[in-house]
Length: 165
Image (tube, rainbow, N blue to C red):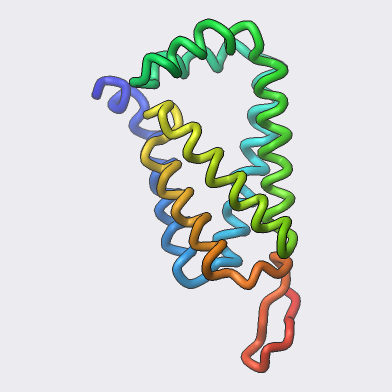
């Protein structure tokens, strides 16, 4: 509970944003996709830059997780491999950001990648904004179920024809 108190502001922002993303996914899946694009593009940029400038910043996540397996992974293997690991993660986040703007299989693949990413980081607890990651995963699942999976900038008019933003 102490970790939550110390990180209440970023935790609240993460969960507030996740709730906005979830609410939009019920009716405006294109807006949800735009928000997820922004989240993943920002995360790509932030993680890449942090990994290359101050990689030891990631070691704090060992204190956030309540799971010994995650803690041990971070303080042992991950500690020696921060830069290449986070660089690959940031590339994956960039691919998800790009894929979520495209159409068809690219969107589906990006959504599956986003859902898996959100689930895998959930055990980081407060460090991942838990339960924000699971909320965002649910919103991403709704994209798969409700969106027409066309390009992000294409909207359908009432007559079924496409309209660009």
